[in-house]
Figure 1 (tube, helix red, strand yellow):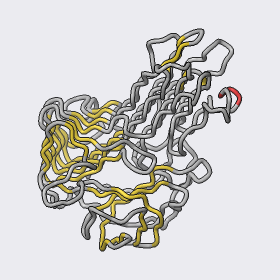
Figure 2: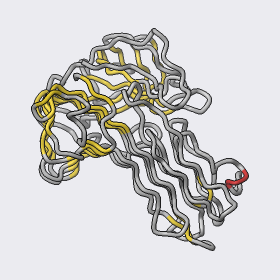
Figure 3: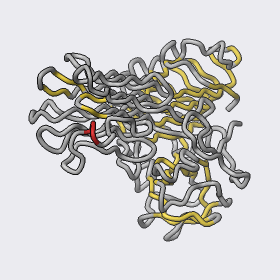
Length: 411
């Protein structure tokens, strides 16, 4: 079994957790309490209600306080019951309070009143007054079957929740031909275009919050440093820089030869997924007063899937969004693409085709003269007993995902 309650090492200087992190149980493939799930068409699990439930299978709440084994939340709890598993996760902080970002724990509900009481105390999380910490129900299915061409997804990240798809299946998850478990462009949001004519765009959003830029409070971004990265978010200066996660993002092109190019975002997180993050958004494009001007690409979301078996002809995707916004001045200018998100599979038997796991970044806007930067790639971890009948190792998983699987282990 692989369990982490963590914070990033990676490339950003986030402080490690102290030794008081919680020890909680992560059931291997769940108890099947939500029955079988059959998906035909497009199903968003925060809007899907299984038989026997009165609320969607996935409900989530913003956590306002953590005291030992008690979680205070921002609304009256609905759709939760004793015995439910929750994924408790820190999804966003601030530049001045980066400690414990991406920390997470799988926990079990003991009782549900106006607050949530857990079976065990948790610690190691930041103060929810300064971070967006979410408690999200993890559904436990028996079998999950996606019909050919079907899509299983989740709502976009809103700044308060969304973007995260986590589930368990005690039996098989089967992906029909062309089917997809897909959280592409569900993560940190691309920076918008300027708020009025002739304003530069905004930096892409990242783990530290939304970016600055294109308003009358700032003027041109050359003068206020919004052309630089917003941590993982791409900068904006006429064109937009690519959002980042695990590497590979590129800056946008300078709008003229002596100008600064908008920066690509900065890397964060680590291959072991000691912390979980979305991909960051690309920088928005300068506002030329037309409907073509708009945001950079959104980053990919997070998929956590634990199942006894994962098989089929479909895909699991957490890609960054391709930027499509552009503007017209002396030349034409493009917005930045979003970065890939996170895919974590914890399965017994795995059998998928090459390239089935996709967490790549989205390209910047490329059809014009001054191009937006490309989004960086995301992170993929696979824990399994076997892959196509052979032991699950990095060597046997080569080619399964893009980018390549960064870490493996037993589920």
